[in-house]
Image 1 (cartoon, helix red, strand yellow):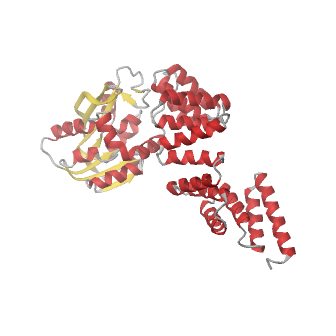
Image 2 (image 1 turned 90 degrees about the vertical axis):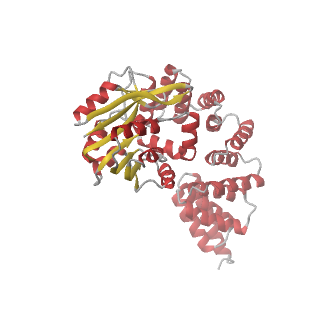
Image 3 (image 1 turned 120 degrees about the horizontal axis):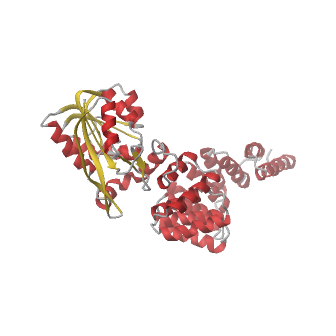
Amino acid sequence: MANDPATFERAKALFIEGVTHFEAGDAAAAERCFEASLALVPARASTLVNLGAARVRLGKHQQALQALEQSIALDASQPDAWEHRGVASAGLGRVADSIASFERALALDAQSLSAQFHLGCMLNEGRQHTRALTVFERLLAAEATRGEAWFRHGQTLQALDRHDEALGSYERALALDAAQPQAWINRGGILREAGRHAEAAASYRQALAQGGDPEMVAFCLASVERSAALPAAAPRAHVQGLFDDYAGQFDQHLLQVLHYRGHEVLGRALRAAAQGRRFAHALDLGCGTGLCGVQLQPLAARIDGVDLAANMLAQARQRGVYERLEQGDVAAHLASTDRCYDLVAAADVFTYVGALDDVFAGVARVLQADGLFGFAVEAADDAPDGFVLRPSLRYAHARGYLEALAQRHGFGVRSLQRQPIREDQRTTIDAWYGVLSR
């Protein structure tokens, strides 16, 4: 039947119709046409490539990959097939496979700007930032007027800690295309970290005007402009993404670069308050990789942990100190768990929570009589609202606010001491270490 001229012409017409739909932005109609064409003339490489492209656009990455694999099996010399395969693999989270596909596409067509762009993005996804920089610089040498490429170039430089150069790339990106909210956000972040707060605030306002995530942009803006509305907590997606990305390097960076010691100081404070007592069941709020859990282990027979970031929980699980680990928001967990504890600890999680009423209420709910609640928060000296959001995107709390919270939620203050918790650009950051009792 496929050899019949009329059948072939009908398949060809459906193919052309599919291409027309695809170019008009109707990927669903294109997919139907390509499928119908293949039903008449199967195993046609060009039709399979286009079917794969339509499915990629529809987000059907696994089905796209199937069509593209068939096309490549018929003809492996098609750069478009390899490029679409790279996009489909990226959509399925297969970073190494995606990189290999884009490299194959470029081996077949070294001048493909879209393959270069995608390759650079995926190299960054795979943390191969030096290679990604080479790819983007080659791309920009051929096409210097592409705003998104300058944005990706800036992201790559920022990942390599070349912040001044990254700022220049973001400026180039925005001069070419100001409708890039993430470029405004990233630019604002570099200015914020450089102490150029007024310029950072202006950049965040531009991000809002260009459709940037209102919650995240408002959070960043409040960190550099006291007149901005003060969010009650960091956006959940920000915290989760930050620590999922950070998990593999977390302990090394925290302990060796930032010289973090909060878990150890809090552990000593809890041991002093316990006076030799061994607790039946402890809860580690914002447990991270389990640094605090190790400190709690000599104090408690059983330890549970809760954290937003799945990758951090995976690290914590490897320590073998927790009976149960759950992913979730600490306030929501405290409000819903059916477990009770005689020891609750929060070593560094409240740096991402400004308003602590819900957390203190939750701890009061789960903490048994005569139980202990230990926490650490960065110390604020000037906090009219009881807490401030610093340009580091971390909250700091005033002593009076903590004491008022303790009284309001029925806690007695065993100790509240000010000691260092970490360093920030070689400046020591102090914290309040509190131990409260029911």
